[in-house]
Image 1 (cartoon, rainbow, N blue to C red):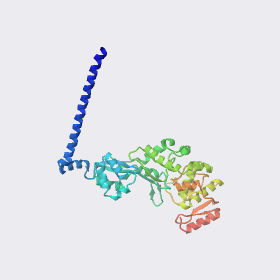
Image 2: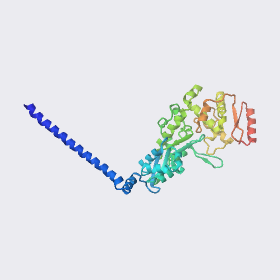
Image 3: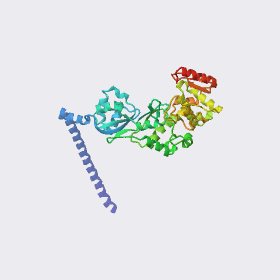
Image 4: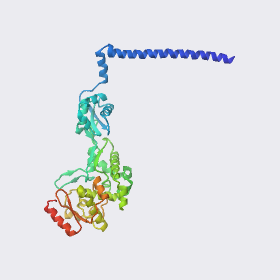
Length: 397
């Protein structure tokens, strides 16, 4: 009896619930139909005026060159559509269509390179395209050339070559909230001196040598030549970590770790040799100059390289003075036997390859003997002195 009393009301409740759900579904269908009808009415019933309003909403574009400042990043492989979407997300353009429509009228858009760009907010699509194509808008762009030192160098005529630290500081600059902000060279020096090399990303095979080095020179040679992208607004420690991560990957792609050990040298020693080769030789002569360095090391001879004497000097000249060569210090290879304690410059892949695979030969001397930079090689001091006389006659230095 109790079963029948509880079951009947339950079934009645279920039937009532089903009917209520059916009525709700019918109301939703009528509501959707009304919305569709209204949209069709706007687009077609009202005519061109209503359609223009809707199309204008979808194709909205800002006017003018914008306001404020924002840094955006174009990634490798980004399409024009993807760039437009990114710019819309960052508030640069009203929507992706505003950008892509303007870009379609400018064939140069295909020349946009991956990297960071200084832009404005609320720009018209055309203004955004123009600014993205302006080389002055590129920020965070770091280009390290072979032979560049950490510090700036000055020639006898007063010309200054920016060092790696200055180049990084310059590349870090951008405008934020109306103010130009950069990582300072001194900030980079402090990070370099106070942060453990392993924490900065120095490879395991170099960590101990880097820790022993003068803190002001400890990262010398670890920034390979090439192009890097730095995110403006990043703290100094993150900037150095980021550049080192890319550089170390490039360096290790040369096989330096395994190939150096196969030669009987530590990888860091080979990196030092590569930096000497980079500073002393033009590309065709690099394998022979590397051989001279190894031959002199094997014979226990001092390297006697002007590039190492120049390295710590404020003013650097192709030919060093007798006074400079007389100054005793760890980088004076006229006074000290063996390699200097660190690399003396950024060595490119060609110089590293030469240090890993020097050209076979008996040479123990070389001198730049042609104005184009070509060197003359010899096996005896007498022959070398004759090459020096010929180099002077040729105006090589």
